[in-house]
Length: 253
Image 1 (tube, helix red, strand yellow):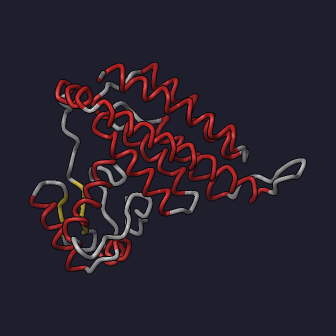
Image 2 (tube, helix red, strand yellow):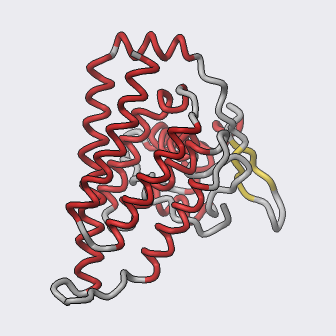
């Protein structure tokens, strides 16, 4: 990830009361979700501080602590910057299963939250593209090139991902739908919903048949959105998330 990257979909401005602590939390969120992957670079300090609504001093303090904890590394020079060094540890499946069993209601709550915000995001984006394409015409115009290119690129990324990187590419695909609506609140909500399930999703195996099934569902989601069909987009996302929920309950129940 090069410079100039907008992390607005996964970040929200920091509140003044606990600026340092919340900055650390926001940066860890984008790292653990894989929005910025291992070996990638954060945007320049000035841009990142502006996105978070904090001083550059606060940002430097947060980055310094993350560096000491082994999540990032700061490099000097023309090609320098803050690079991600964090790699996801192997999950302790038995521990996560225990937590999932003890917090069954929280798992259900997290799945419900994700269902609501992601189906809503797909619905809204499809509505926007229908309006941009000229709703009511016999042959609606194609969606704006940027939205189409981003969605198809994210779809290609997740379809081409190996088992090691699949969850990260899947996260970026789903977050892109919310980001393309232009709503920072919706983007943040989708990132938060994913974060609530992130450790559990990473704990279950990446199954070949599930990847194949998900690829068909992802394509159906993109097709419905680009066609400007909100109802079909919502239904496609709902079907996909139902399958993810079933896997989580099956492996961790």
